[in-house]
Image (cartoon, rainbow, N blue to C red; front, side, top):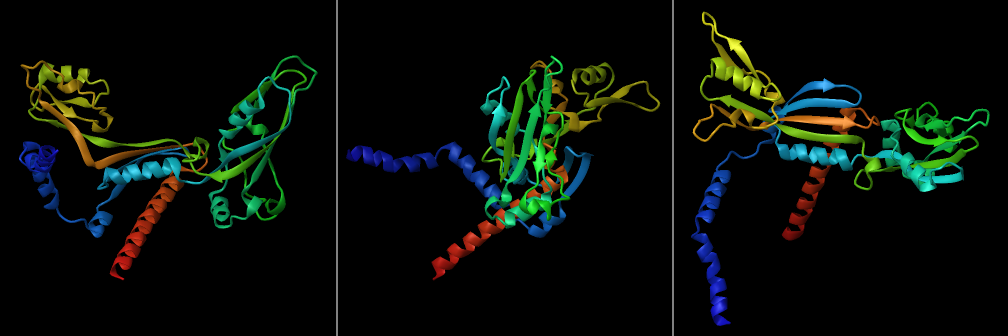
Length: 335
């Protein structure tokens, strides 16, 4: 037992002598020698360039923005922005071929458009049934023809009650898309139900997420080490599946030189550096950590600009909360 304890005590000294720990010490020293973080440099060093923007999608590039912040924004967009979605469905009649549970699930996944100002007001004033939005679905198949009919999301009608009749009568509350199929009815069948929409976040259920998907990718860095001409240049241009490279004519010569024309199309497939071992590749590829392409695809509940703005405000709030908790802990230790 004593020998085993001695061995365990000696383990850290042996590990310190290993080359792995030496490498770690070097890396640690290199990190410590870096310039300290400056909030002013960070604030004025950020630049945003919009590539594509519409009501449902936004693509933009950010420079001077660490990808750890991008990942935090991505997670907030997916799971922490509050929206309304159908939570409970009360069936009064359902003679269709689908069960109540299946129709309720399909209704819950329909995105509901609610004004962002109404959501802000609802979060500040949480009082009982005030946060409930009721939508009615009542569809009957007429018996005058034998073909089935399709029930779409435009059949959902907003029920105005209580404060909605006066204060929010001009705010439209409706499904984002009118052509989402809910069910099909045969002659004589009917669906009559009442849908109760509540406010929630994406971490509780995917139906409360305001984005279909959101992701970011680091900007590729492509460098031609030595100039490539002629047949080799045309071969590499054709070999790239996403057409990152192009040919440029050289003045006073009939040769064509390979250039990087569209680096943002690169998917890091490494076809341009895939050569036999005896051939030295003339191209290097990598990632630029300080240049990020961010993509936001919404469900139509909010515009991408509003979502990005809200995600930044939530991230700032989290940072302030962390600083406040640290300050309180330090004050307790001082006392």
